[in-house]
Length: 289
Image (cartoon, rainbow, N blue to C red; front, top):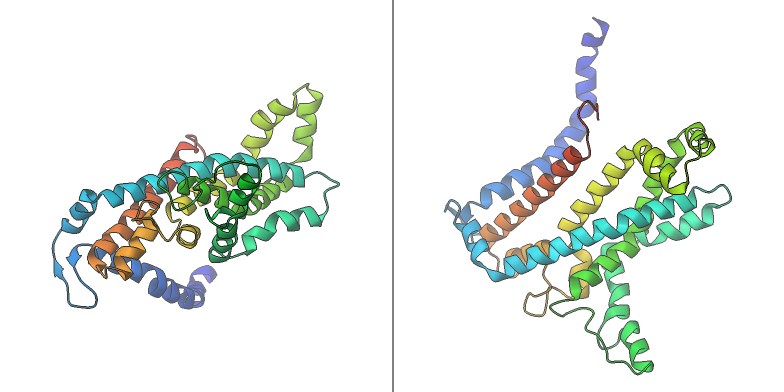
């Protein structure tokens, strides 16, 4: 009875956060989905056109280029960041590793995406970049690291790896800290080697950390915008666009809010769908998580 009497106080305490969440999250999402079914240019009143905006997107070759680039970045980020973050977190978990190592590994994550993209522009730029200057000094031909049709998404994957591997290593480090040491010591006494201990003891024990980290990586790859925009701006002629940068182009360059909202809705569907599939694939039947 006492709990029911206090329920209204709990609701009242949560109400400000709930209102802010609805204003800045729920309403924009609903409005974007609604606008995606309208033909709306700039701030003029729109009219309902059904799935025409989505059909128009699917007929554009630049949409498929952006989807391919986002796919490369997402898969590349997952395949590189996850194992390297695990190894770095395991390295930082060693008893003699002081906070300096942790600070150094986490510093790139403190930078904004704009700043990280600007830093790597001076490294990867085909004309003035550090990489090409080194290649030229050794007598090699310069490489079009960014701004081309092929290497840009891989360069963005490298930037994301540099910036976020420290963040994910901290997640793994927290998972390692919560593990009971007796379990690892027992596996070691039973004769399990390093590979077996990691595969059959440590990974199952921190599976929730792995799932959370993997979902962050996938969503970050699908929503990739700042680093790509700073490196190339989507050029040349949209060949280095990602889904997010192309959404920006449609919304704020062409001012086609209907098609841009359809693009944003597709990003939302991909992010939610990928996250759900990942969580379902890594959750066994009978698990409470």
